[in-house]
Length: 205
Image 1 (cartoon, one colour):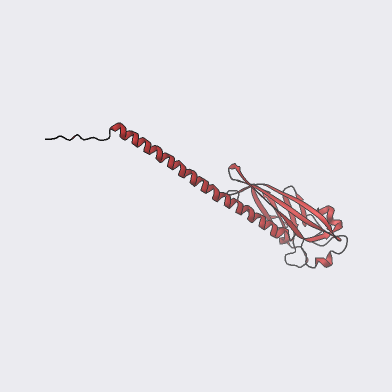
Image 2 (cartoon, rainbow, N blue to C red; image 1 turned 90 degrees about the vertical axis):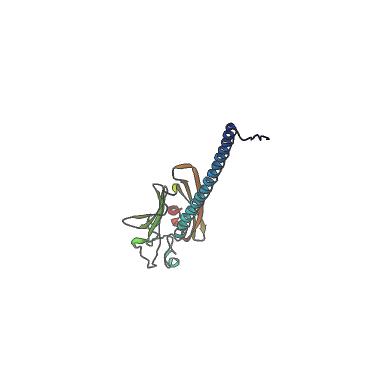
């Protein structure tokens, strides 16, 4: 009777194979984690850019109407500009990272309490002014999802006949909360639709 000799893997071979399998699994897990992290960062970057652009869009939409007044073409014909939307710092002024301006929303020629507007940086959030006195500020961004670190304004003026045309460039810098290495910047130049008499240029330019 012929005997058959059986052969099989040794314990050492099994251990080596198991070790190699674990190494491959660990490498695959690490690659997957990196891919998921990269995907998450891309989503976060996309949300951050969207929030920045949305904030700039809100600023531009309101600021381009600064010092708007019904029948301004009739009231602002003289060298001076003394109507209710052109006679004080609440009508247009910049102080550090804060800008103030007013708009004749209801076109009645009078400055109502909800017609003092503005924007400022406070505790990592961009805030919008919605009332004259007392001042009321509403957050446009959330520092928990996007921390605004810098808000800058630059005004340029140029003569346009007897009037002066103005442009305001707003620049925003933001970072991911808790991670200063991830920063974003965005800026936009806004043309103010309401020109002013030349004598007002030193005040507003």
